[in-house]
Length: 112
Length: 114
Image 1 (cartoon, rainbow over the protein chains, first blue to last red):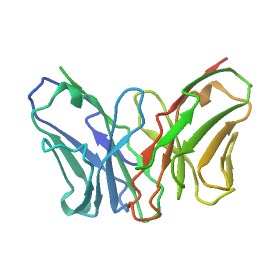
Image 2: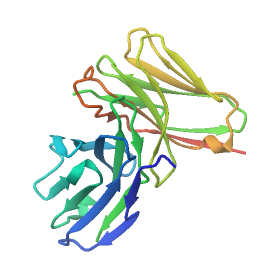
Image 3: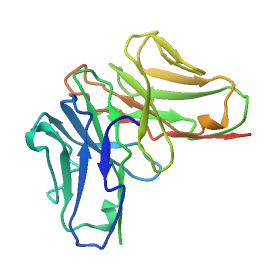
């Protein structure tokens, strides 16, 4: 157990619905990352927070995706009007100033 | 952008055998990270390499970064069924300006038969 938790672990939704995922990082970590992983591929970077500031967003993050980290603690990733192509594992990771990252167990999303 | 290529894509070995997984970068590596992932779960951090020629070991797993810092290898000695999983290499290629954002290889699926 790395200390990074994610909720829910699994989500099944219908196309067009909105979904929200939560990540709770290790408490002293000020950096928080979201990645997306599809079957047979490595994780792809989505976005990065340092404390409450969102400092970088990937081009993968379309307008339907939004992420927040209020008060620099937990983070939420929302997907609006889900599409079948959004089906993937969504991973959250956190770190302090050091480069090593600790990943949560992921949220597996299936869009029907 | 930086790309990482892992080889082989999959590997099946008999318990007790040694094996090596390679990770090759299109650019100089400033930080190379190895992770293990069980199917459907998150990534478990194994080791980080930063210096050319660096070698680190943990239990029966040894990771190396070549002198040119463009290739890394992960070697498992006397493999066990508990070593089975997906091994991923990740690179922090921007020399500290990427905020620790990692670019990953596609992964190597390891199966260990008892």
